[in-house]
Amino acid sequence: MNAIFTAVFLLSLVVITIVAPDKLLSTLLGGGEKAAATALTLFCIYAVWMGLSRLAEKSGFSRLAANGLKPLSRRIFKTDNEAALENVAMNLSCNLLGIGGAATPYAVKAIDELEKDKNEFAQKLLFVINATSIQLIPSTVIALRTSAGSGAAFDIFLPSLICTVVSTAVAVVLFLLFGKLSKKRKKKAGS
Image (cartoon, rainbow, N blue to C red; front, side, top):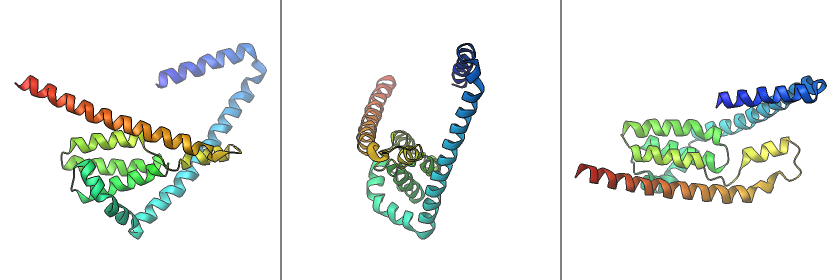
């Protein structure tokens, strides 16, 4: 992927040098400035959400949320590992709030716990759900749109909700379907 990005950058550099050489430096600096501003905005968003997530952990709210989600999580992920269930609950909560970057550390901890139990099904399912992540509130996108000066930053809410629900549902169905097909093939090969 880095090779593709490098090739696109170099090709763009050659084209702008030929078409508008006087704009080369200002374009590079302007792009760098926008990239730095976006990175700083994302840093601030994640700092706030990671702080709130840490506060939720220390106050016991994450444990309370995990207890509320345990029956469902236990059934979906087929595990009784309390640490895994708590981290799964925090991961799902962060994803529901649209802060995927804050959700990732919880997914890593959950998968580590599930690995101790040798629960490959739950690890793979969590990966699928985390990758598609249903977002009730796409807060990162809303914050980025707001920082870019959008007059209607919240217009992304309904399309985002619909897309993430559909993508998660399709991904989970495909995961379960291919899991069943894989088991059938293994049984046939073993016979």
